[in-house]
Image (cartoon, rainbow, N blue to C red; front, top):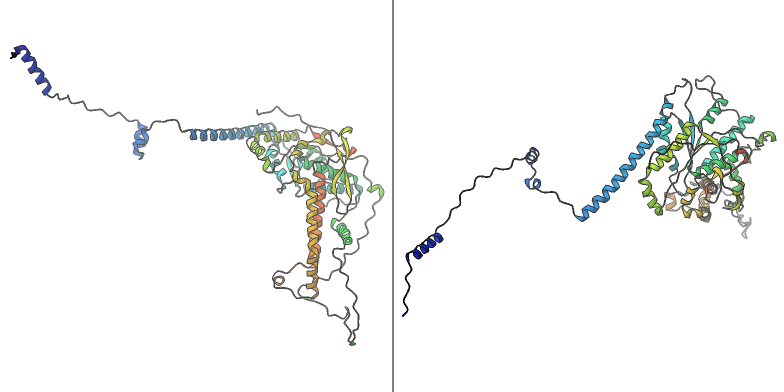
Length: 508
């Protein structure tokens, strides 16, 4: 047997110490109490308001990708809008500061401030007829108000209204000048009474503001007619009534002759023996319009247009473009964020008028005169031809015509379509009106509840429609894209235009 080795004393002591070290447990020393971090006054105040502490412990971090896109786009759009409107205010204020000293100049107690006439025609294709005048109020008026310049606005609700207004004013001026018409009744005893020559001189000192190219075309057409045509007063309704008499739309249908006796010997009552009908639908006794009164004969020397025209008020051209239609939406959005360009243009125009810087009008060049057939055909079947004049100041704002809607080329055709539809339905309406008026049949329940128009009302309705149709067709002939601006060589020495000498631009 192998003998066992007995460990010595040293080994036994090492083993005992190892055993005791494994078995005894170490107790860690107690940690010192933590001192809470001192809160800032802002955090303490926010906690007392009831905000959860977890919200205050959050650390800021970048938003998500979608939020970054949204915030970037919104900030860019808002910043561009704010920048544009701030520039508008600065530009407008800069021009106001240049002219406001004129409002402080003293005038006589019975005198009036300078006054200008503003013309704004209807933009083709837009039912809002006063868009041109709204443009004037927003972009031109603030400078005139700062300079104490008064103004009178004349708005054309339909195409041709401005031309008719200008024509009538010029003819009235000519009639007064040759003694065919008395001056307007103004009492000389009034404090503000001024002779006609003084009023005319003040009108020359004022000026005329033309908003947009359609207004310019109508203004020049009315000016030319006023200084070219005769001085006879023409009632449009009376003249149209004489024309409509010959179209036979309201003629009585021819009835076959009736025999006055029958086989049994009983006579048939003649129309003179029939009882008179005084039913519910009997109109007033219809009478033919009286014959036209003989026109007052005007001596030739008074009715002849003058060879030399008097001086006219200077003209201020204000460019204006009205964007309409779905296809113009991108341009509308661009204009919304670039209003400063319109403010600059309107302020410059007003500044030219206030400072009275004028020059002679530039007549059209000979090479730009061209005669082209017009697309307008009158209801009588006569095709008119217009002379297209180009060049010089007559090309004012010609670029705006390319923004006319393409569908406007069918304006005359649309009018003719409405006219044909109306006259197609007219015989049935006229037959019903005459039958009810003469009592040849009883009214239906619907006719009793809603009486149909009488013959008198149908005639008045027809007159109103024809006046509107013919006026719209003639007015469109003036402002259409292919038509030129009316011109007379007598205008060159008497027409002046406010000059383009303006201060430097104030925006980038």
